[in-house]
Image (tube, rainbow, N blue to C red; front, top):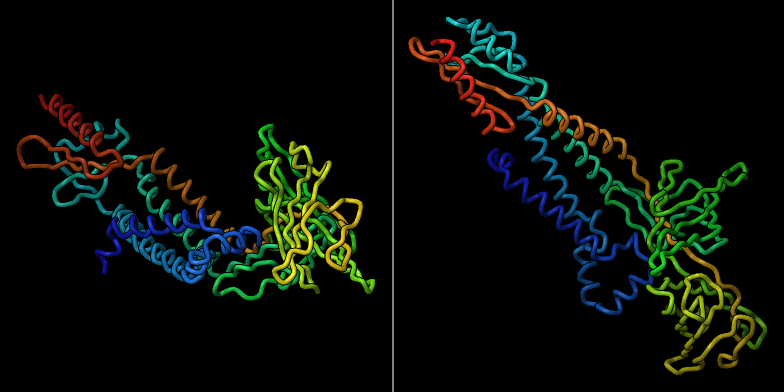
Length: 431
């Protein structure tokens, strides 16, 4: 078992498996971060892979039991390595009070090595030991301890994480109830996710490069306090907002909300919102469909924010709808922005066109532990590279010349060359 824990192959295999899982999460849509249109398109295009991903929990990798086991195994291997490294450093520290070996010519040898930054260590098996940059010996264990803290923080985060995705239309209020989330992806040890504040979506902010690619986008929101005074904030991709233990992230999904009002012959009017993902280029319409609540109608919409196809901003919008009932087409054509059309025996009108934005709410209590681990990693790396530990052993035969041997160092080839230089220097002194 010990050989398995200290084997570099074990650590590399676990790190490789974790890296492969993270890469898979970049390609497979994750439930808590994707809009319903993306998930629905995936399910329609490839139902078999969609079901397989659900069974293997590839659609929620970071909270899956198998991923947590990988992280836990990597933590155990790293913890054992850290234990061995600290034991070695502490044993050397404990022996530092032992008397150094006494030998003829000690002063001259010590002076030669002292000029190179070495100090004498306790003797071992008839050898005199010298070390340089002794604090640097702690660099590797400190670095790996920091890495262990990061892995522990990652395990606790994935096990207890609470994460939810919501689509908010401009002017809509999110009350923080678990039922209001469109999708939720909690860790296996997490409880029900309740956000301790309300949030009103005011405006979707968009900016584009000349080639139509997004330059920046975000959500202007108001955090609604119990005092009644709203606290405005801008949440963007590079500017998440943290409040009362919950971090709100801007998701990469946003688009247009087309609100349609359907009036029945009896006079009752029903309003529903169709949330369409923004198209890749402004010349293509945003598309999407769903059933109309309370009716047998199935809608498929194509919305172009700019009839000229040059802008993503709503300037001269065009809406086309295809409506079926029981598999029979009852309407197929344009829907005017300021008029009504007949859909069967009913009349349909556009009530509003607004933007919608996807926001991701995350409760993560272990960020402090992860930052502490990163700090230790930086400290350990600084010790290793700025104060590289070097250790030499000098054999002390009864007669003849001393032999200098490289024992430990980050650059062993350079250390062996230094050992040869010291031997040559001692020979010159003897002559």
